[in-house]
Every structure is written in structure tokens, then in C-alpha cells.
Amino acid sequence: MTRSAARSVADVVLISAGVAAAYVVITTPPLRRLAATGLRLWLGASVPMFLIGQVRDAWEQSARTSS
Image (cartoon, rainbow, N blue to C red; front, side, top):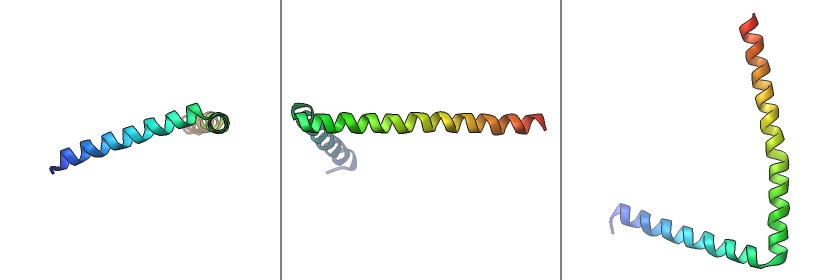
């Protein structure tokens, strides 16, 4: 088996496993609620942290150019 064929087979296996896992999560209400809660927590933490980082970088860059 060539390297590219092995990579293609591995990609197909991973994609099919991801689709199967997504199907199970979507069709099982407790897992769906858990996934929704996790998504809300992740977005609730990552977006504000990203914005805080952007503001801090802008603040530091503005201080450098004025000196």
C-alpha cells in the first residue's frame, strides 16, 4: 500500500467515525444537551478571552508607537 493510499484510507475511516459519533450525539437527547452545554461554555470562555487578548495587543502596540 502506498503512502497516499494509506492516508486516504485513514481519512475515510476518521470521517466515517466522526459522522457516526455526530449521529449518536444528535439522536441521543442527554448527549445532545451535554454537547450544547459544552459548546456554550467553550464559546462563553473563548470569545471574551480572544477579545481581551486583542484589546491588550492593541493597547501595547499603541504605547510602542507613541514613544
